[in-house]
Length: 227
Image (cartoon, rainbow, N blue to C red; front, side, top):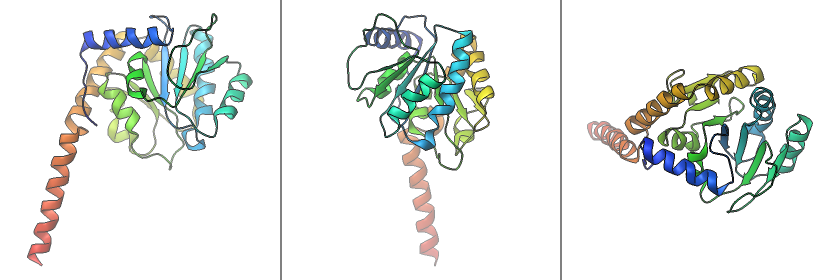
C-alpha cells in the first residue's frame, strides 16, 4: 500500500477530525471493520462478540464500513443480539441524539481516512475464504492495532501479541475477550500500533512490492536464459 505512517500528533489530529465528522465522543471506545457485507466476512460473529463488549463497556461503538447484500440481514442480527443500530450511507455526519451502538456507514470514498477514528481494526472472517485483506494493512499503517480471526495469510501480516491479536475462527468468546482486553489497555494499543507501522513499512509498501517482483522476474529470466 502507499505508506502514510502518521506520527502520534498526526494520528490525534486525524482522530479528532473523524470523530467530529461522525459525531462520536472523543473518548468513546471504537471498533471498526472495513469489509464488504458478504457471508465470508462473518460480521454476525463480530456482532455477537461486540454485544459482550457492550455489557462491559456501554459506551463502546462498532463502525461497519462497507456495502453489500447482507446489510438488512446484519441490521436484523443487531436486533437479535440486543444492539441498537444506525444507518448512514454516503458521506457526511451522523446527528442522532441517542447514538446507536452499531453504525452502518456504507460504502465510503473516505474509508481509509475513517480508520483514524478507530481504536481497533477488526476482521471476523471465516477460514478458507480470506487472503490478505488490504484494509488491515491500511489500518496498521495508520497505527491501529488489529484483532482478527486466524485465517488466510493473517498470521503473516499480524505479529500476534506484538501488532495485534489473532483468535480462532468462530470463537465468539475469544474475539470478545481480545477486543475488551485491548480497549481497556491504551498503552498496549499504542505499542501495537507502532509495531504495525514498522511491519507495513518493512514488508507491504509499494516500493517493497516492486523490488520483490523485480527480483522474482530477474530470477525467472535467469532460469529461462540458462535453458
